[in-house]
Length: 461
Image (cartoon, rainbow, N blue to C red; front, side, top):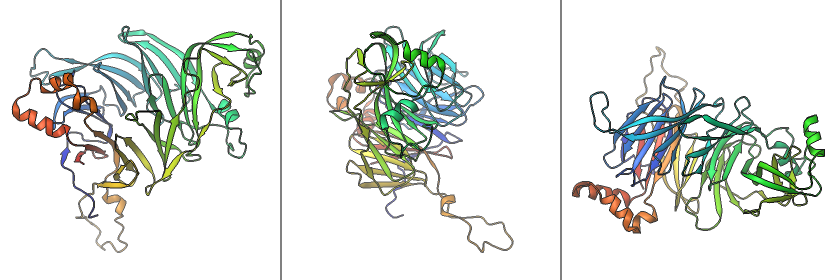
């Protein structure tokens, strides 16, 4: 335990388990770095990371368990999924004045709301389709089947604009024909969806209970060229008829192209995934599971800009809804670590942050070597009310450690280090003392860890 550091600071306004930590470095809308935190009682807090004080607190009506929060960059929009089976987008607005009823500078207004399935562990992915018209795309679990995926398009502030473009999307059949491994596929489904992440502008990555990871994107209009069709299993007369009625040059709207498949974690469930947003070349993300493997996933887009799919090159499902290249490579790249049950993973420019089920947060360098370990323990003063004492010494080590439920990090982006406009934004509305504290904060790497008792610890690395 000697190599475990105490936190530099602790934030203590939540009374229940932390579910999301989102670091916001948006100096056009905020003149300070912001930490957004949420919990299982519907509370969302915006923290000023320089003063470490809340600048805004919002509690969702009826205090539902918040599953996930996403910040939609530079739009002051916050997408929230909660266990009251609701997906909401809040718009953060500045109040004209602070009063007794409204003590904060900011307030939340609902810009969009829709019922969704929150019966399993999965979060959601959201894509911005049109900057001018505020058109978005939501990717989430099917409303009735947590193994399927629903995809919706909608516009902000227009409740009736919601349109489902894909219902109960299931990749098992087409992945099965792509893998072509009867020894591997000894089950008839991929399992429930565990995790979504947004990859680039149009690619979504989904991790499954079976350990498979699939990357896909949607093409609005694709021409299907003649050729031998894929032998994807059909399950209904309508699909068989659809298979037979294909034209030689059919134009299909909203066809889903699978661009990546990995089986690295099979048969263990995918617990978490994170993007390598700082990589200068290629498209890379990382994944974790209950074993000690970290999956390393590189996506090579071979069909970039192409508006036609040839049956000679693609497996295409019987109902023309899904396509995958016949020569798609299956991701197997991984590295073994010293840690198991990695429930949380984040990637910065030079570090990995891992949160394990055993309550340990590990900071690794890019070579996966440990640089720091974070472990928050409960008091060693144990109370035993038994008249006969504790002969069996039943106080387990696990009971003395807080559960890690969310991790995040802050590092100053390269653009903030050298961009004159960014420097001007940072300097605005600040006295000398606050400017000094901000500069000191920006020059350090910070790790944030949320726990099941509602505490958030801050560590300077």
